[in-house]
Length: 454
Image 1 (cartoon, rainbow, N blue to C red):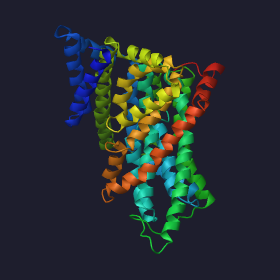
Image 2 (image 1 turned 180 degrees about the vertical axis):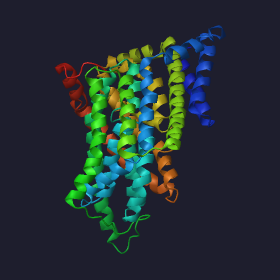
Image 3 (image 1 turned 60 degrees about the horizontal axis):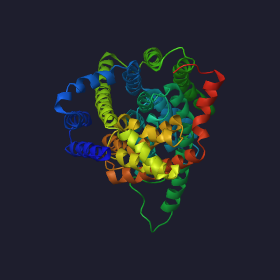
Image 4 (image 1 turned 45 degrees about the vertical axis):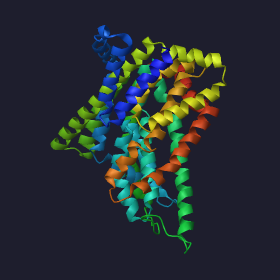
């Protein structure tokens, strides 16, 4: 049996188990066990335990629960409200300013948490009701928050980039640096679309023969004085300094990603406890329990996906795939387009964590064979995962938004998020045509000696 046929059987087993509705981690575990028994032999079953241990025996993975804890501490505090109010104060006079402020708040919150669902939930709880009272349609309100939440896996620190760095054996510090400028560019693209969409809705609403969208009416803006704006900005400065501190100790080689995450947790607890007093004893226990649950699930998905990746490597599927691509002599951009379509389809059904860990070892030899930069590809892969988060049928952020705004029909959430899928696709094209947008900062930091570790 060819290696590709064996890989097809493993993929089919995984998809069947996913469709049963069982937790992703358990479906991956069963797939890993069956793959070992069927293709390596029942006498090799003891390899499962060894592979699980080896995949978890990595100090770099400690960064994941620490960054998750850092994000949950912010999520349980008043940080999201402070960020949203600051954005509103500065953008209140701009068309769609309130929706833009939710995207900007999401971008900053993403830099504090590294998690998309947490970002969408934290900002959405504050932003969606506020936008509803100001006359924004459900489509603009929910679309902005759902799309803004996707920035959580791109803007550093990012759990997805950490996992890619471990799976691809690339510098996590360089991956973090590679995500900064694309994160800023995509945030700006989101805001431009909000401005356009708001103008379109205003013109649509002025036509007497057209019914307004769900929840839409005349948009009103709250007026802020300049002192109010600077006061709101002062409340955001500590968050920016915190992100800078975490990235500084990482890029300067003062700390590893795990140690930088630990620094971030300590600073977050000090900031929230002293400056914002947003967490009490009961709230802190809740945050710790949520962190334990989320981290455990992420790490289980990671280790079982890694076992499948090792089995695929034993079967020489990545190597044979790279050889096949070389023999076909296809244009490398055609191959990249095919890879992105496959990732998008997978992202519609699976969480980014499992895709990154399971697919990276398979695709990396192909990427290197074609001459693509692995840091550049890691960022592109993450943007593709962003698209999956707001693409049905299993777009996680869509259901997070539906959960915090149950009165808004899911159809409205889907329609509101759909344009942002196109924007992210446009971003993929932009970063492919101009890869320097991703690679310039990592190369600049590490070639100049500004960054020495990570």
